[in-house]
Image (tube, rainbow, N blue to C red; front, side, top):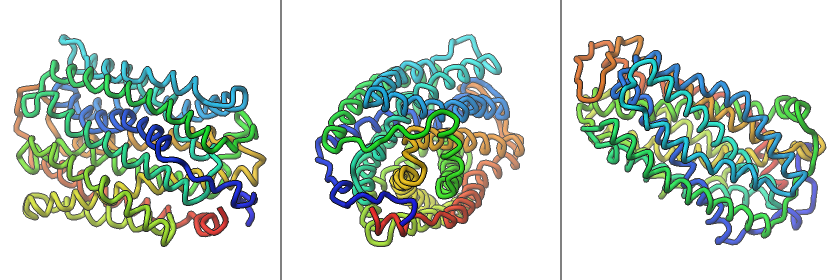
Length: 453
């Protein structure tokens, strides 16, 4: 049983009450807006509203993530320092609640800016928003590893989070395009959307902070000081199980964000109906509200690892159908997006509930390595995928010769650009998800963790 928590089951298997669970999950409602809206609209906002070339637009979204990769592990270390000194991570969470201000500014590009200056504005506030998101996300996601709960209860906790996160993704994914003006989106519409959604984000994130405090009272923290600074980071990066889980999640995160970035283009240029953006987003996100409890049941029966491999395989198959495009027929294509949505639900629930399993194992083997450090590396990986996905799609558009424009313009796209829209949305995600599946097979902790904690 090397690498696992060896305490008696009674000490680890506390059952969390639903009230604090719901409060904790509410924080994901606000986080869902940041996860969804920039990934869904920011690339399109740059290329089709601000007249930024696709290569520069992709770069403007990619470069801010470099700061994330470097600073998320540091934020994780600071979260562990807060835990050790104060007994909680509350101050970082409250700092992260400034995220809605950066979100609103992201879409409030001054009217005179287009092209490179507009891309610079977006990049600056994207950096600020990403750092504030890290300040909230890292201590938030460290919570399951902090609590005195077992293997299945960690999955239950993340299932609550996943349902509420899905509501946030769905609500923001549906509302954001409508608030911008839909088919007649304008700069003013994007600015209005940013302000309205920012208010909702702030309320939800504050409720989440209160929910975490209640959870910690229900199942007091098991965290120990452990290693610190660069030593803690080295311990995390040398953890073989963690490395395979992170590598697979990087591929998954890149793929799902690529699909989100491609939705507006696929709707407008492949399906020739920009209004279908909302329909495709709903088909992608809504199934998670129904199937997340089913993924929880599957994980209990066959384990998180096998369930996740099934989700990855389903995502790859659905993506291949989308590569066919219009000849497949609209009902089939919407059905394929729904399959992606079912798989997406599993890929949000299962890796996030496997992460605290890895942290718990490391705490036994490595002398109490802090959950914040592991979570900081994890969120840096997620941020990298969130950047690589849109950037990969932007590169596809660039190779195809896609023509950028301002709001109200409708340039004729070359055939190669239209092919890039289709294959970038279907074939490329299928290949990336198959890579994720192969990486995920190298993770071997799950079977032992399931029978021990």
